Image (cartoon, rainbow over all chains, first blue to last red; front, top):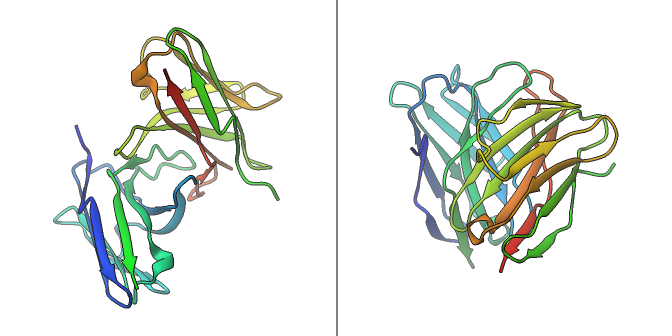
Length: 114
Length: 114
């Protein structure tokens, strides 16, 4: 049972373009939605996160859009750069105090070509 | 300020042997999570521990797998009688356990069972 569905699994974008990754969830108990960036041989690192009381959150070139009624959220990377080439995971968890049992999507391997 | 440390980074075991994976959380963190990443898949939650306590082991296989986080020393994920299907990257993450606190991931241990 895949509780967080992520697409596409791979993405090739030209430098300067917009990278878009989409995710959908099923569990209505989820109320915290982080995105992680993972480079080869490294652990995931938190990139940006959103809670469902807002529909959009922007940090630099990274924007999360959130649609609570559709149970969907997406990551937009503006002005994509070769250094953004990595695997991106959307995730979701209940936001219960300090305990976060995070459910990850399958990941999107992004390649930004010069 | 060292991050989450995991060792070994690479571990090769023959079928039937035991694997011990160690995780030292970030300084000041007393909450540890273990995740498994199978090839071409996202990370899957395995277990959540606090010092000397297992809080949630709902993602742990029922047999051969165990985890501990003693009062002193690193957290240990132990896999007995390994099989080829155990080959994966195992990541631990730590947090301070406060509301809204980020999980910081280690670099992972890549287990290969031959």
